[in-house]
Image (cartoon, rainbow, N blue to C red):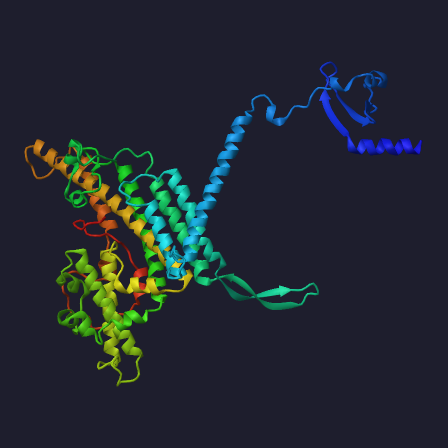
Amino acid sequence: MVAALERGLSASKSFNFKRMYDSPSTKQQQSQTLVLENGDSHFVESNTPESQNSDSLAESPVESIPPMISPLTRPGKRPDIDNKQRNLNNDISIADTDMMKDRFAKLLLGEDMSGGGKGVSSALALSNAITNLAASIFGEQTKLQPMPQDRQARWKKEIDWLLSVTDHIVEFVPSQQTSKDGVCTEIMVTRQRGDLLMNIPALRKLDTMLIDTLDNFKGHNEFYYVSRDSEEGKQASNARSNDKWWFPPVKVPPGGLSDPARRMLYFQKDSVTQVQKAAMAINAQVLSEMAIPESYIDSLPKNGRASLGDSIYKSITEEWFDPAQFLSMMDLSTEHKVLDLKNKIEASVVIWKRKLHVKDSKSSWGSAVSLEKRELFEERAETILVFLKQKFPGLPQSSLDISKIQFNKDIGQAVLESYSRILESLAYTVMSRIEDVLYTDSLALKQALLAEETSDGGRTETDSESPGSSNSGEETEKLDRQHSKTLFDFMGWSDKPTTPPSVTPKKLSYLEKLENFNGFRSPKDRNLS
């Protein structure tokens, strides 16, 4: 009896299947157990009020049990489609893994694919990787339109890969730990480095704002782009678009944009301006913290006069100095001349700073001018650099910036500098495209007003029957003046020479002036590509 019971228990543990099903006649659930023992099969039924008798169940063969329906074979399911989707996801995952391996292999090799150890530093390799990724994703943003979804997904995915390095750059900070017996102990724990902890989330937010700005132009059909070679494109060409012959001309309605569309453009321009200001401030801060390479210092002349030239040096060192008048005297007609002036002024600032810190008067870096005047000259030179960066935001990097980036060894600073630089460049490009549309809109308004004046008999003023166009033009000029406020206006400098103030103004550092920017409107007659 005991042996038979043990055999039954062992068999039921090995082959015990429970199945719940609905009877079409009774619509009630029944629980049955199929037990296989010694090659024979029989059913064991749980006691329920409406169960059938055990004799009829024992006589039923095993083959009469309905087969269980697999989830893959249910009606409405397509196993072949599921398999294809699963294979596609696997292929995408494999492709992403291979791409990640390729990216980080180049970083580890320092872009030296021969493996001979002649590659660049890890910081420079990571900086180049971020720059090249942005160039391949954004390229030439020739139109105000949303980015394709595949490009957006690729940008977010690959920039996350490159920024993941900063998650492992940590520093020790004190922390309080309380034990089980209530004793509070101060210990040192690791945390992401301070500059990365503060700036990486900020840059990610700026990145998202720029992408959202482009997405906001989805569905706007009041302005559109035409081919330059078409008849409509030739008619839409203007002085601004002719300078950028590789960009498609912008076309607006004959009477200009509607008021909501114009306000939307100005709002987006203001938002992009704030992004550019923030990215520029972060970039300037990081570059100022980078060490100046010795190779750059060795290439400098021994005094500021030799670096600047006699005429520029005399203008900066005069008793009365006006930065607006100084820039008006300089030849800034081409980008090369502007960059050359910036390189000279940056070199003189480095020379003067080194002379301030050299105590040995017999040294070749010693200063023959008093420290007060040296600080004044340095402040004036930095002010000119701020004005140049504000007036020409799309200017290429100077020799000092390139040298700092090339010889920088700090990976965290390399990531911050490159990420902020590409966001600043993208913000400038988007703002330039918005200005293209606004400039075309202003031309359309002027042409509409001129046509109306001609139709009214050549009168110089429009009559009161068309207040809409006049109000629209006045609103455009008002908004334009409001959003075109430059650093000259903010700092209180005018274009006309004034008498020197009797009280010396408070000196602001280079970074403080960058943070106090109030606008980045560039000249309309300059190439803003």
